[in-house]
Length: 246
Ligand SMILES: C[S@@+](CC[C@H](N)C(=O)[O-])C[C@H]1O[C@@H](n2cnc3c(N)ncnc32)[C@H](O)[C@@H]1O
View 1: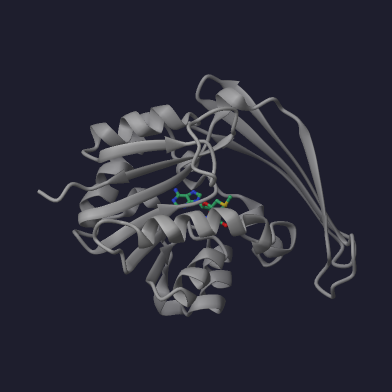
View 2 (view 1 turned 45 degrees about the vertical axis):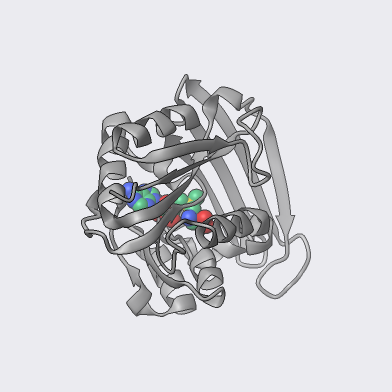
């Protein structure tokens, strides 16, 4: 599926979704990669978007690469970390063998897969692409806890003018493991206004964890948030798993 927020409006993504909103999530991932049994250095960020996490990982000393299917996002990420570090590809196309010490997919990338069978295939590809002892870190939408609240952010525009950017969003469960993310983005100074619905599948962190076990991952854990608590009322959970040493 093609989304305008990731294509023709990718240049505005970091305005409505600024990096500082995700600082705790990013710190959680960097910490879990650093503490991986294999001391992860070469990592793959799947669905790397505008490359914010890639740039942070690079700055933290990781040999970081990204894949991303949306051309608009690839261009933004390449501008941050260099074109050689970002490849235009979908998670369904991962085909490396024992190349990475760590693989992550942040902000619900995994939920853009079509269905559980597709997620199982993607997880098997991720398992194969990890070195033995490598770590997988997925941030997953969790529909059972979604209550459909309408949320609003106001952010500065490109010239720093306060409240130029308005971002409305709503996450609503449409089934036990499906959800709809609705977004409205507007920038007054850029005269841009976009609204879009993104269907999310396999939106149950426990289901993703069980698929990870089926795909061969070991030590699979589910956390409610970057705080590392057990799954509770969160809508954005983490699944952390290892490829065994054997
Ligand atoms: C909500 S954005 C998150 C971007 C980035 N991970 C972040 O944390 O800022 C979701 C991203 O998933 C990407 N995506 C959608 N379908 C995908 C697929 N089949 N394979 C890999 N990435 C995909 C989108 O293009 C978009 O960049």
